[in-house]
Length: 219
Image 1 (cartoon, rainbow, N blue to C red):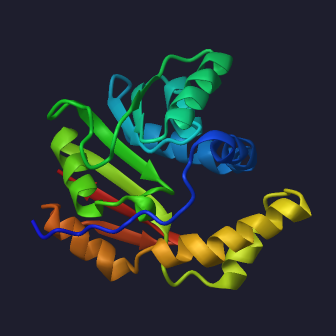
Image 2: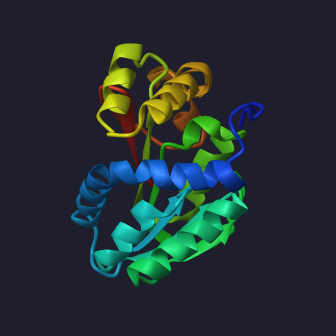
Image 3: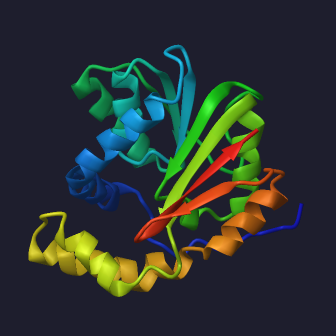
């Protein structure tokens, strides 16, 4: 496997930054609930799901509400604490562990579905992370990777941010982050294809969206 490593240059998602992200991304709840329903509709009721880099845990919580057995792993200690609190408030059972996407604290062939949303661009060892997604899946299991595209336009990003209904200061800050950090770290679609193949995924299906993509991979 070729070493594909990059230094992390984004914001450290700890402390006040993680708490700000928790508050701000609540505006995405309709999209998150729709994604949870879409995932749940493809799985049997007893399926075991792993979310990698869940942040505040909203998607994991919504999947648990739909009866799935869910666990999640995040590298941020603050996010793990926030996600546990959010799950307790919602009254759902979900396991949140501290860990690195490139060395998941999950047994081989332990889950039926892996999902990673809006975090892959920040992974320091993306190919290793993709290989880990495959390792923890049972045969026939699927992984879903959702993130930005490198070629997402500023107009598309501005439309998304304006649609969140956040304050002018938050809109300014989010546009600053998208322009100066996130777009620069995102990958073009051909690079996603290359890294998936390098991690031994066969023929991943990558569906583009206005700002990003969904990559579906089957073990």
